[in-house]
Length: 407
Image 1 (cartoon, one colour):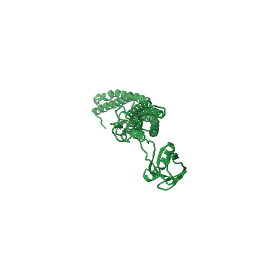
Image 2 (tube, helix red, strand yellow):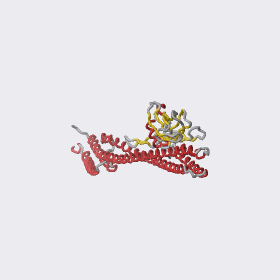
Image 3 (spheres, one colour):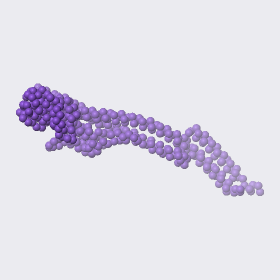
């Protein structure tokens, strides 16, 4: 095979350039710390590095989400704590108002303070976050969660949001609610369960009041039928001068036989009845439907009762019982929401720590693929330097020989 002088020059130059390129690559690897400088260096490894980098970036976003969640939950926890403190103070004042020795001035002062607490609680229920969103409004976070309408015929304080709960992603498989809806925490709180007399036959007078609320609550919860109203009807029949019989109207089942004296109270399942009548007279009563009432409305109703000078002691006692039970139920709901926040924060911390461990593992895997082995790279650098020097040294010898030297 004949090799021309031009070919000798071209081959020698290419050899030098190739060695220079190899040496430059090794130098770049050492300076950058990366052994994959371009996808063609290791196509499979380059693809793995891209995938692992994406996972690391995703974990970084999850860590940011975790911080956002912590801030949101801690803000809500602070708000609930403030409402809890305010309602507990209102409850103390309610109990105090039941003291029979208080005069009208004392009651007025209590009413004023409870009114201030009501306004404070209402404001807290409409708290906004740093972005101006109403945290208890659900998905309707651009408008207040609760409205006040002085002229409303029913409840003055009403929920204006929805039951939506925004969630934030903390990992590929874990989502946690950022907040609680005010519907769950405040609006869907049961008011005091009640019973009412629906009709009478023959009796001179009949009245009832719930004296043992816990006992009645258990009876109501076990027997109330939300579908068929007739199943909530009961009858008291005076069967003897000293005896009444309580039966379930729909089934006819006799539930209890109780000692009776006309004009003297007796109790059935926590309900105190006072009847004036004779044998054969009857009184029908029912389990009233459960009602829901937010704490602002409960406080407002009690303020109205405190300022109503026409209420007799029995009516005021019923208003006080309504307020106390409503406050207790609200405090219980707030406690449940606070516990849920604590649980979410615990889950958040656990997922956050798992993400940190996963991030370390993924970064180690990426490092194994793309990071340079400095001992190996230094050895390769020495090798490429020697190769380049050899190519440069032989370039002059090879290209310096010519056929004309021998003619």
